[in-house]
Amino acid sequence: MTCCDHDIHEKDLKVDAFRNALWIAFIINLAMFFVEFGTAFFANSVSLQADALDFLSDSITYGVTLLVLGSSLRIRASVALLKGASMGILGLWIFVRTVMNAQDAIVPLAGVMGTIGLIALAANVISAVLLFKFRGGDSNMRSIWLCSRNDAIGNIAIVIAASGVFATNTGWPDFIVAVMMAGLSSIASFQIIKQAMSELKTING
Image (cartoon, rainbow, N blue to C red; front, side):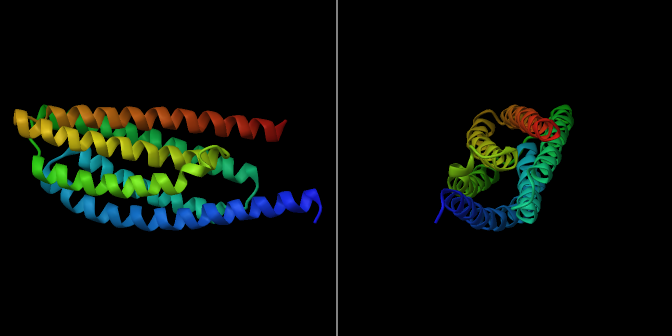
């Protein structure tokens, strides 16, 4: 086997491993969307609502990524651009929802927040661990890792916020965490778009 053949074989193995990890993460995230979405509005928690939609966004992202695996860098970078833009839109939506809940002085159900937050944390930690080895890849792979990492951080914050809501009987801990999640989404959006634009620029010469 020549050196070139060996490199191609290694690349194929990495793509196959990434595909398998993505399928597992896709199933976990889609299942968690239904679980969390069904309870987020019942709990009146804007951070849980945001996290539920984030699970849906990640599921769509994983599904689209599975479709373009093995495609040219141009296609993968273009998909990463769309994912970056969607994360930015999600961040904006979270900001708007948080302002609305704060104006209405809504107090979420702390017990439901904490329970669902812990379940979501476990789901995102599993996804993040599966995708950790691919964090240094192209913009498409990196965007997947950033999504999972941010979600796990957000879930830890939700659990902490649930304790804060219980202790203060106000919705402010929930609002603060929601704004933090919006910030993480916006930062990740910028990082993904920047790398994808750089890759497209390199391709175009």
